[in-house]
Length: 411
Image (cartoon, rainbow, N blue to C red; front, side, top):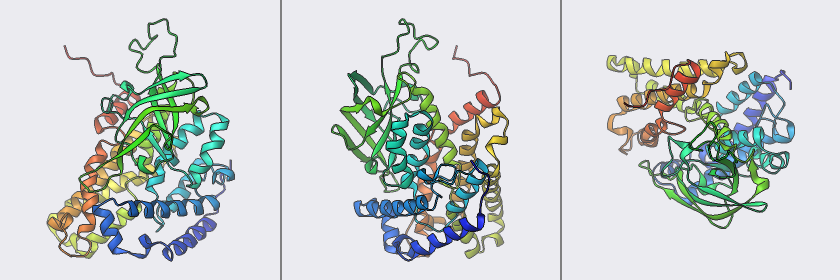
């Protein structure tokens, strides 16, 4: 591990990538027709184009050692410490490059679980492809009857020799329609606790196991869920007797809940960074909207502008702090804090865009930079649910960060 960061070299590399992809990618060169279509309808052609652009950028970052800056060269990194790695990620996230959001679940969530809990063979099998962008990962966590209460998942895995046979349904799975690997939280009854459940009488947590599912395996069916934005990034996934080798198990049998917590923490932390929904590009767009419409000259818009500036500054300030320097109790809730600040900033941006544009924010009247805000405005409320509701985040901060007791049961 090294703390040395050649910022000039990284900046030059990123600038070269910007020039390269500006010359080759329709999303960067301003294909307005494609952008308009992608904002209102998720087409197979559009999905393939965006995924191809994302993978091309990711491969270039991997080859430059910028895909996973704290990792070793064989995993697309430079062996940097956390502070230097954060600065590299910020430089990459601020660059004018094609969007890589389709890859982030695999890179930051599935990859984190495998790196921390997976066997050496599983690490070697999966991580290089995820970091290079050759493969895409998704989370198979939420179910129709297990959302906020994730430990209530009912998808079951039955041991059959050196394989598991998985049956159940998952829902709200981001990018499952393009995924190669799925990190699946499943219920197993393989923990011998004498029938008492140990310290977990219901067996909700001790009987969970994490498996890595091949999304192309027989028995896997993915169906898109159309959102009010018009896109279909979420999916429901049916697992009908899907065979998973035991070598694709992440961690121990019955140890799935700890791994799920690793993934959820990584998800919340990611959502609060510049690689999450609050990208530097979004911030630049709202600042441009304010300037182009002389919004700061309107007394009624000054308070919404101030709220937006303060919210974005709060996210930036937290992102710049080094996690290793935090008090352990604060470090334990960094993800929830990041996510709450991020959703507040996104709300402030969406509200300001509506205040400036009025109906032009969601209606196509031909005005510049009007309808382009539609998908952003419509999708922002859902981020209060993604990765755990705001109430769940606040409960974790209260209990794990502040040491407050859990709410009493009614009565």
